[in-house]
Amino acid sequence: MNIKSDGTDEASARRVGVLVAERNPLVLSALREMLQCDGRFEFLGSVRSGRHFLELAAVSQFDVAIIGWKLADMDGADLLAEIQSRKLDMRVTVFSNDHDIGILKQCVRLGAHGYCFQFDDPEIIFETILAVAHGRICIPYIDINKVNDTPLSLLTVRERELLAVLADGWTNLQIATRTGISENTVKYHLKNLYDKLAVRNRAMAVALYSSEKRRGS
Image 1 (cartoon, helix red, strand yellow):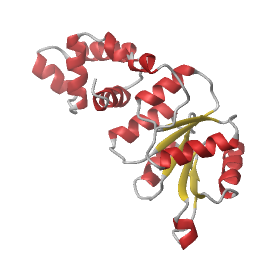
Image 2 (cartoon, one colour):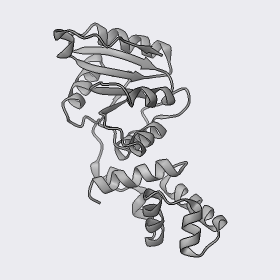
Image 3 (cartoon, one colour):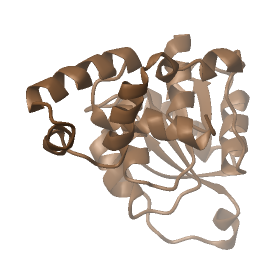
């Protein structure tokens, strides 16, 4: 973990403070050099794992977090879900080397504010970071109707009710007790729910649900 000291001067205070989570040392080195050579940014530090990023983000001040899609211990979807679950107030840009439109859609659904590719021109990357730092959403063009057509629209009324109580923090035992079914049956329903949402765990399902609620759907 590489963290810059807290000392700032008047010039650095006007720069956009950037914290980076990226597992690839070559990508990290290139990104650090680009940011440090541009007077609009201040490179505040870097980590390689999602766990270290969450620990640092909870106690640090920065304008934009840049997260790679694949970290040492989790992927970007897991990290975005954890950020939402912990209610961490931050501006996030995903820095991906994968041109899969499905990843981009996932990031939008999970609350990413910006998205750029590692192979983009540096100025595109810079403009994305600046836009996010100034409170805007900066995402490559995709059909917004397709983004809004989330897997949640495929859920039954009962499955949406189950997702809502998950978001309220109910355990499997609480769900079983209050609905009169066994814990094994609850686990079966949750597995089907996760499959429909194309997520791997409860945190990601709740993050997706919370993101859709914030968009007013």
